[in-house]
Every structure is written in structure tokens, then in C-alpha cells.
Length: 396
Ligand SMILES: Cc1ncc(COP(=O)(O)O)c(C=O)c1O
Image (tube, rainbow, N blue to C red; front, top):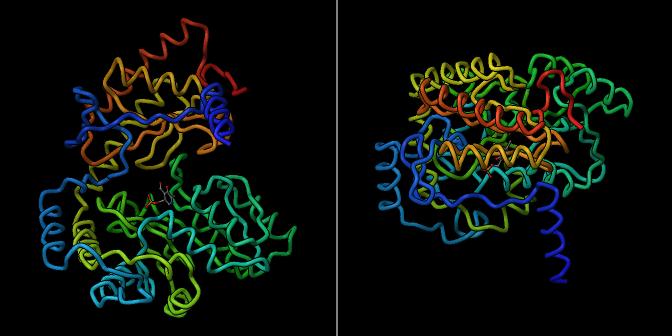
């Protein structure tokens, strides 16, 4: 048995897919400390930089002093506190839904949504680039699954027509976590009306940042939406936005909600404090938008193959080992931390450097990143390797 695990890790290493994340000693602003080096961090999802916001930290600390540190049980036992229900109502109201449920993480929220709402009689049509937690949740549901090409509403339409999936559910993100591109909400809304679809939209990367006052972009089309508090909200945990009738259903039938200890009241109170901060953060959103566009422009001008419409900017590298090599070199030689996203996070041979921009980054940071990447690229090209998409070079 043990050999099986060792062999799997060995294969992972040989195929350039080995995971060995650096240990972060601490973080400060847009920097982290690794070993004793100050490293510029482009691998953070704390998009608004709220995770270290002085006022928010004080409010969160005060909440834990006031309410204690544990809810002591599941919502279905003695953990269904008024503070939590009131906080959920505030979230629902802000984002324009009837109700909400908090979860310990976005991953768990997605497991709950798909395993609770769907079963072997359901049909799920999903964008092929949805997050691993949606994929795992869908497989738990045992529904019939049909993938459509990333972002293609035409392919989705063909899928619906082919399986006669009137009344089926569509699963998508609103801002894709690795490609950084937006869902075409208008086209999806048209399909929803035409085919009576139920739309589950994961807005993990959009809530807090995109849309008016960070309200996301899919409010018009989502039947159920998922948000995380671990990214733009600078906290942890997650929320599902849904109708009151579905919330009642969850309390009766959702295993991932029923059989887990509720997050404590202090978390719910902190989520509300975070939401208030997010709602007042137009200045941060404007800065983030500006510096992200600046980064994208520099990378595009330098000839890189770039995707991303917002604060997630991805540079297509292609080969997995090459992508890890670039990420490693940027860290060792340029003190830059950037994620090399590889299979199965992205499709095989479509490895990307996934740049997470934050409101804390400056244009100088962006210039430093692009100049450093250009240097590493020159080194690679001297050795005869080409990045995917450069000079008409295709991926393997
Ligand atoms: C699209 C998407 N959904 C859900 C999650 C999971 O959220 P959490 O980190 O709160 O578990 C992530 C996390 O990376 C994500 O990218």
C-alpha cells in the first residue's frame, strides 16, 4: 500500500506536477517572508488587501472576545445562533437574494450545494474550467454530467439541445479562477429563459471586487450563488446565496451542513464587519482595476500570451516542467512569488503562471514582475525552449 503512494509521488515529480509549496514565515502588505528573504507576492487572493487591514483585525479580535471561540456544535444541534442567522440575512440582502447559509469554506459550500440539490435524476451542464470543488460536488451528486467548452455559450446551447436538457442545471464560475475571464452573463440569461435552466454560479473570485460595490456580476442569472470569505473579504469561510425554501431544504437534507460544527458566532459577526468594509472599498477596487490593467498591458506588449479580464492575470506557458522552472527561478533570483498552475488545476500542457493582483500592488511592482519574467524568458529561449503561444509556437 505504502509503495503505491510513493510511486504516485514519484510519477508526479517526473511529470513536472510535483507540489511542494514554499513555507511562508509571515506577510506584510504585498510582501511575504520566505526563509529570511522579502518576496513580492503575486500568489495571493486577498484581492482588496483586507486580510491585514488594521480596523478589520481589531473588529474581528473584539468579536472573538465578545462571543467566544466555538459554536460548540452543528447548526442542527445547539449551534444555530441568532447572530449567525442575522448575519446571513445581511449577506442575502446585500447581494440581492432571499437568504444565505455560511459554510466553513468555499470547497465545503460547493460539496454541499451539488450533493444536496442534485441526484441521479438530475442533468448538470458544466463549464469545463469550473473549480475542483464544483467537480467533486457534482460527482458526489451522481447526476448525469455534460461538460461544455470553457466560456462557450454556443457549445452550451448545443449540449442542451442534444440532451434535451430543458429544466437542467448549469454550473459555472462568474470570474474563472485560473483563466481570469468573465462569464457572459447576458448570453447565459437568454439560455436560462429559453430552456428554463437552474443556474449555479460560483462567484468566489468576483464577490467583493467585481460589480457594483463588489456585488458580483451574476445576480441576474444565478439561481444559487457561492461566495468565499477567504479571498476579497480577507477572512475565511464561505456563503451560499439561495431562496428561503432552499435554505429550509438544506437544513433538512444537506449532509455537509447538518453533520459539521457551525462556524462560531464571532465568525458571523466578523463576516458582517468584513462585508461593511468591502462595501466601502470602492477606492481599493479602483486601484486594483487600474494596476491589473497595467500589468496585463505590460505583459501583452512584451509578447506574452495573456488571459484575464480583471485581477487574475494568467500567462500561458504550456509545458508543466517549464512553468515550474520559471516560477522557481522568479522566486530564487528575483524574489517574486507566483503560482505555477498545472494539471489538474488546468488542462494538460496548458500550465500557466497565475498572477493574483491585489489593491496593494503598485505599477512599480508590475514593472518589476514583467522585467523579471522577460529576463527569465531570455534565459529559457537561449536554451532552445519556447513559451506556449510565443512566436506562433503551439503547445505540445
Ligand atoms: C472558484 C472557486 N470556488 C471555490 C473555492 C474554494 O473556496 P475556499 O478557499 O473558501 O475553500 C475556490 C478556491 O480557490 C475557487 O477558486
